[in-house]
Length: 72
Image (tube, rainbow, N blue to C red; front, side):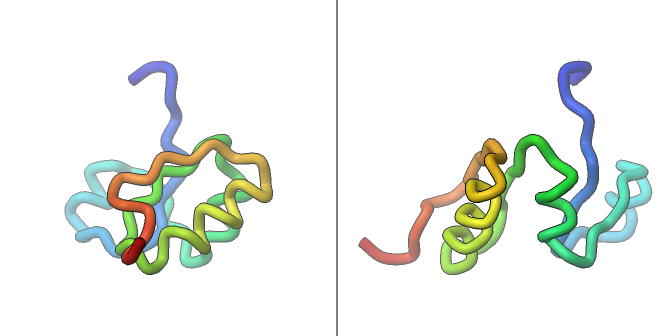
């Protein structure tokens, strides 16, 4: 999409996809959050809250793909 520019990714991704995307890998999600305007969180539910909290504290837009919590 022309309206978006992919800054990079953090987490697991297979090498062939990484090469196809030609996008930098960030070993530290904090650095990726810092350089982004918006963050898509595709982690297991148990990890989503902490990542979302850090992104929101830095006034970043977030999109969480799965349920936000692992329990009610």
